Image 1 (tube, rainbow, N blue to C red):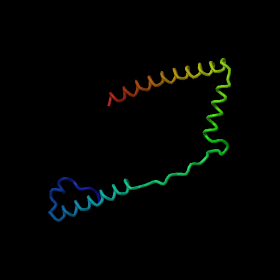
Image 2 (tube, one colour):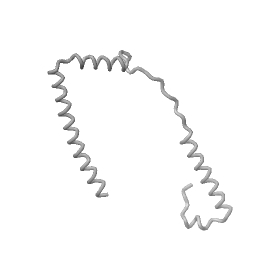
Image 3 (cartoon, helix red, strand yellow):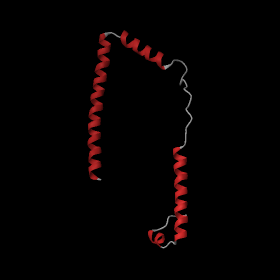
Length: 105
């Protein structure tokens, strides 16, 4: 049933009030129990592609990075710094817009 108004609540006799409080308490306990006692089973770890695990992948990438010439490393470092600046500028613009939205509410 739908909720009751404060006027309806004020007009309840003692037995109806006690019954309503019991129903509310039972419903509250039921809701809390269903949401707090749910234990999700852990999923077993699976390889995504089965060709290479993460440790091997990290070692391969690290080895390739160490094997690069200094000129190639500098090229990739410059790309990274350029992208970092682009990201920082984008975040500044985003935060300005977010601040405007928050202050206008």
